Every structure is written in C-alpha cells, then in structure tokens.
Amino acid sequence: MIYLGADHAGFELKEEIKKYLQKNGFEVEDMGAFALNPDDDYPDFVRPAAEAVALRWTQGKDDTLGIVLGGSGQGEAIAANKINGIRAVVYYGGPIDIVKLSRQHNNANILALGARFLSKNEALEAVKVWLETPFEGGRHERRLKKIEDLEA
Image (cartoon, rainbow, N blue to C red; front, side, top):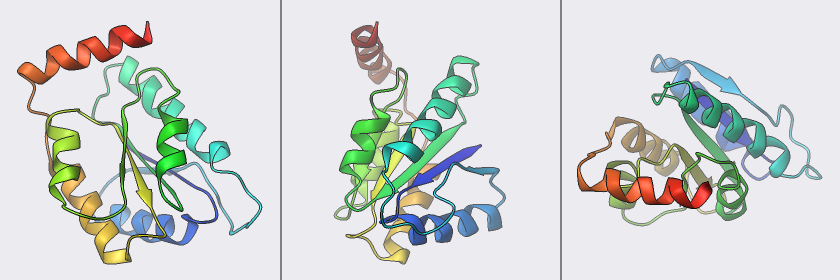
C-alpha cells in the first residue's frame, strides 16, 4: 500500500505519480488534496498519510509506504516526521543515490518530493528507485533502533 498526500503545490505531480503507481500494480490510497486549491495547507494531507503509514508499520506491514508532495518537500517531511514511527526524507533533485540511500540505510517509509524543483520524469524516476530499493539491515538496524528510542 502506498499512501499519497499533497497540497496545491504538489497536486498535479501527485496525480501523475498516482497514475504511475496504479499502472504498475501498486495499491494506492490518496489522502488528498482532491482538487487544486491554492489556499490549502500541506499538514492537512501529510498528517493522515503519515498516520496511516505509521499505523500499518505498527501492525507489521512494513511494505506500506507514503509519498507526500509540496513545493519543496521540506515542510512535508517535517510534518510527517512529527508522527512516531515515520522516517520521512526529502528529494528535490540531485544525485538519485540519495533516494537509494534513504531506503538502504535509513529504511525511510515516506518520500517527500519538492514538486517545484522536479520534472514529472525526475519525480517518477525517484519514486521508481525508492520503491525498488530494499533496506539493507545489518549495522543500520542498530542505528534505527537508536532513532526509535528518541521517539519514546
């Protein structure tokens, strides 16, 4: 399951990502926005997406992920990271290895995309790489446990 959430700045790119995910056989739940509204606020869509991901992870469904979008992705990641169990990372361009490492080393469960800095193709490539990259485990598990301890 992939949960999506975006404000007005990320709305159009979210719709493209949703089509891509559905076309490629992913189960998707869109948490909004459902229409382009320049006055909406990203926490209203990021929070339900992040809470849904966190809940499913507590149920052992760690194949559940989230993708949230806004202008830069920064505020979206900050909002998502307020939810216990969420490890949201930002991508708004640059080396695609950053996206890979967020899964390999950090087991990130939410990808925040900066829609004002990415083309549709760049965003879809980032999503593809992020979804295809597994968590390595090993020494990284110890580090993630320390992050979980910070939440307690």
